Amino acid sequence: MNYPKLPKECTSLLCKYLTPQVFDALKDKKTSNGFTLEQTINSGVKNIDSGIGVYAGDEESYMTFSALFDPIIKEYHGFDTSDTHQSNLNPDDLNAPNPDPKGEYIVSTRIRVGRNVDAMPLGPAISKEQRDEVEARVVEGLSTLKGELAGSYTPLLGMSKEVQESLIKDHFLFKEGDRFLDAVGLNRNWPEGRGIYHNSDKTFLVWVNEEDQLRIISMQQGGDIKEVFTRLVTAIKSIESEVTFAYNDHLGYITSCPTNLGTAMRASVHIALPKLAKDMDAFKTITDKYHLQIRGIHGEHSQSEGGVYDISNRRRLGITEVEAVQDMYDGVVALIEAEKAL
Ligand code: ADP
Ligand code: IOM
Image (cartoon, rainbow, N blue to C red; front, top):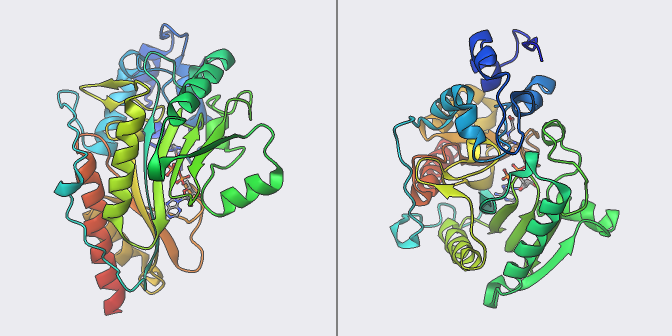
């Protein structure tokens, strides 16, 4: 493989950090699962509008290709190679009374974590047999959940297009054919091995074998962020007693995209900010101050509709889960104040 042509207008962290020197140092390396530099960078090379553009095939990728991953991790999370990761899943430590009790701004709240099964390759390097084994082990673990978390698993294989599309439209299910995931091999053997578990109210959901092997999700209408967090913590602990997840003291939970390392947590609200959105500079000044990311309402790489945005914590590594949610909460309070003042 030759050094890829990366156009000047490319703003991804891949384009920033894949210098010819880094490329030369890494181009012949491979992890023990056979994951190469070419696979690591292919998503960002094929999709120059990527935010990041790199994926890991396994935990070892973060070491083997550290000359590329470390500066990306440092810039995205503000996390150094000498730092260690800490976890705090105690809802009592979260200071988050509903910032919008009258329901004027916040449409819904969702908090998710990514998880991957210990000692398995990550999705970009997994074989079909291993992926199917992950699905079977996870579904077995989920079948033990009780009370509010009890639900059922539906594989994507055999799901009608109608049901699939309506779950996607209502924000419950992952999209199909994502080009960023496609380029790193995350869509191989689609739809086999993929599926969704949820309770009857769809306030607790688990995606199986999408970007990560599990996305554990708690969501509901309105702005009761603490209730959403508390449900998620109960779920994480219950699932963790059945399935062991990939974790290390430096990088926290291991995920296929470096943006998700650490807590692997994205806490978001869908929030109507039509006035503030008319002045994107003012909007971004607030989101930058509170380390927030702005997405559209159909997930990553989508657009806003009707002045409604997906606002979430940007950092996930080197801060605890409570701090990740607190980032989002404090920022949302500031955004609501700014919208009210206009
Ligand atoms: P992820 O959060 O897993 O990184 P996406 O950004 O692609 O992935 O979002 C996945 C889905 O979750 C999308 O349908 C998105 O609209 C939905 N979603 C995200 N945040 C919220 C929210 N606060 N309320 C309702 N749906 C949400
Ligand atoms: N997490 C991943 N889907 N994303 C950061 C892709 C990208 O834009 O590089």
